Image 1 (cartoon, rainbow, N blue to C red):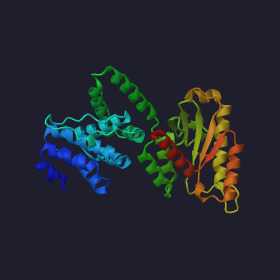
Image 2: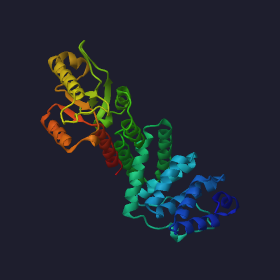
Image 3: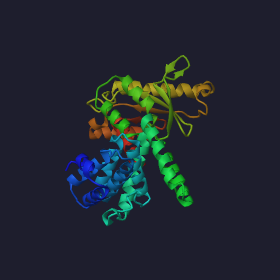
Image 4: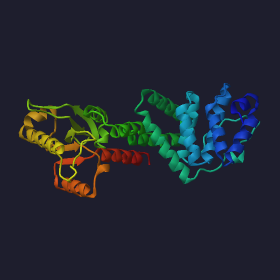
Length: 349
């Protein structure tokens, strides 16, 4: 079936019936056709409002696979009207409701498109809404669309005081949950960096722009911080708790251990640098507080190597080292990557 050709000839009753029919068919083809209804725009204004909401109702019935198609279409389609219809449908589903859908008075909504939304659908749509919110923070165009859409959703619920209060609370929770600026795109970018042998600067640049990869409470990076005339750190991480962490970065391909299981000379040198930085700060605390307000007891973080290459003996020594180190944490690039994926999953789940 060619959806574009169908829309050119069909009346609204035929469109409603066809989407209702597809909502009951459990097949890849029905998902493909419903997705086409979201992506092929009807040029008549009434159809622009009705068709994407009908298709969204049908896709929600298909569960997680259908919702995945809605999210994909949300990012692909350019029309703000269609983006709003898709997002609004997801938003209403998080409340256990189906989206309002304006259909001609001469038609009735088919029972197949009036089905209840279960707990699983509510949780899936909440997760996807959080993903969209998180991703919108990394791109100005996406953020503009996101705010425009939320404004349109607010206008929908404005006539009901109870719904307004619920909307304000849900929107506030959504924004606060997504303030930790970690996105799927950033994780994918970092994963590519880890698996490539690049210069140390490449990793420094990425991590300085994405402090949350180093600490979920990472607020900002003070890049190439000078400690008097003696030292220059890779950077200092400031957290929302007003802690400061001296960060030293080596490359993923720099080995922590030799083949004999001993600490490598590269590691010993890097670790010694972090110790020197911390000692300097503790001995010059008054001076340091001018640039790092609230500094009390600085901690260190050394990022180096790949734990995926560890032997069992390496792992045991690595863990013992971190247990015995009170002020300096040693972490590998694989751990940074896995921690970021876990944090992102926790945010969207």
